[in-house]
Image (cartoon, rainbow, N blue to C red):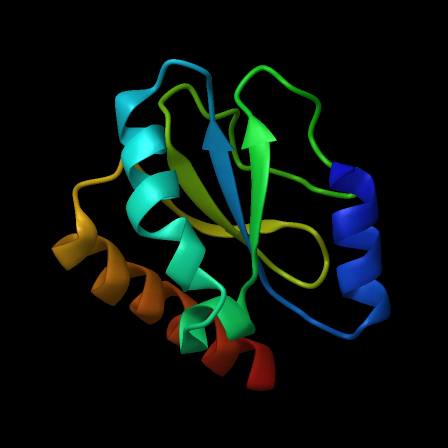
Length: 115
């Protein structure tokens, strides 16, 4: 499933992805998935960098290269059009911090892709 999500996104010309690394039993992952994930896809951030889920100890999606393997959940990793990690947010410090931080990550990445 994960591979087809990334492959299909590339085929549609979408450049950025937000990879959420999570694991069973993670309280903050549950909070994020309950409170943020359902609305994320409807936001400007979600349209610019759709959310893709990955298990902490699971295989990386094909073509994805990370600076280092995440060890804390949740970890949110912005993935560029080449499959390489651009930036990450480790942990979920709450909605008030998440939205501006992710928005800034995406805006900065989009600006650098235009250069």
